Image (cartoon, rainbow, N blue to C red; front, side, top):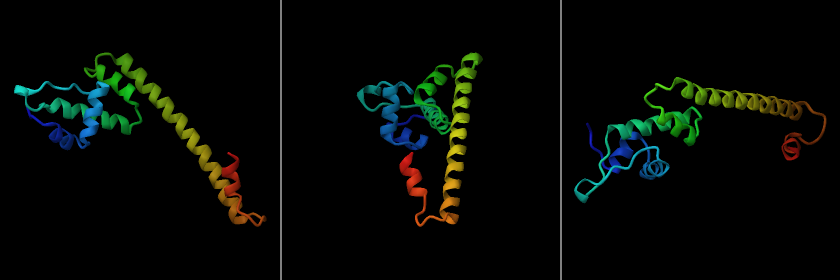
Length: 130
């Protein structure tokens, strides 16, 4: 088992030291005790948990959702894990729908700016009215 200082842990997990401290405060990783009153020593499980948090964030999970997933990390409570993932999927689909609506609006505004008969491009006005 590897043994890391907080700086080594941060480097190995690809985050900053303040991120490690923040994750400790949020309860996403456990803060180890000091060894012989010296430095705190972190293990490979800490690296795994931080990497898990970062990957889950990339998938759009909130830190609260990630905390719930970590509490289920043994994978046995399939129903709870599925519920969290299904809720995230619904949110992603909603965001995709919103992005498609934005895309259509921008595409229309660009078309009007290129081909419109008014002297001013309508993009500024369209943004200001929203």
